[in-house]
Image 1 (tube, rainbow, N blue to C red):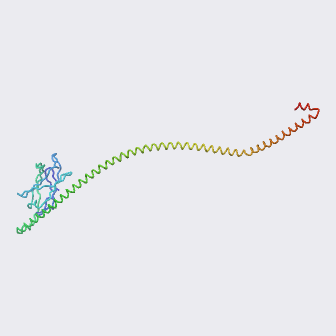
Image 2 (image 1 turned 30 degrees about the horizontal axis):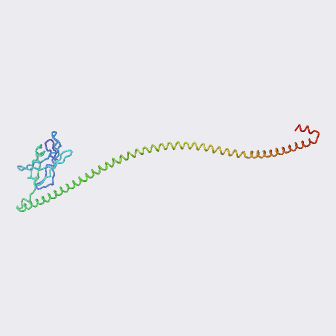
Image 3 (image 1 turned 60 degrees about the horizontal axis):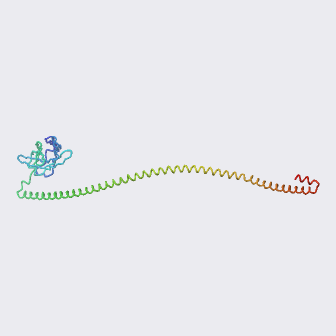
Length: 283
């Protein structure tokens, strides 16, 4: 890679030879230069390479890519190698049709070839030239077809990108709607959670009341069982008292009957005796 520092072209030693007479598009010479020069942005400029073999001159367009630096590529064709030996080169930059910048010249080297075709009579080289012309034409057709294919692919990619953009917009709207629904449902869930907590508290209070009522019922049950047991224990004395009462009643009735009979006898006896008046007074 030939680095451009300021205006100077710094050529590494192992890159001084750019090819041999007859080479065609097998060698590439790459130039690296900053995007700005004296505060001027050159990334939008076009670049050309001037070459000179003795008194033979040529102008070559350079392919440009822009990244952190400007990179210029010279694909060396057979027509660029006008002679063997040293070739003088210089880079020039253009903004439209106006020349804006130029590097300082430097030298590269072209190696000689045997050049056997020069020994053949004229018809053969002419045929070679025609054949090369046909090959070049066929290559240009392929290149144009490739360009058309790439243009169609680029258009298809653009359409797909537009469809993807529309789909992304729809997805964004759907996501927004989903977010609103989620927010609404989250609010509802919060309300339900509050109601559930309140119901939980009420259930806990009712459970506590139920526990109290259960304790009271257990107390009443225990009292009832105790009362039943007490009543059961008192049944025998009660029945005995009842029996004694009945017996006492019978005795009382008998005694009353006897007393009534005795009084009646006394009355009868008094009426028959001289003491009847006294008994009457007693009675």
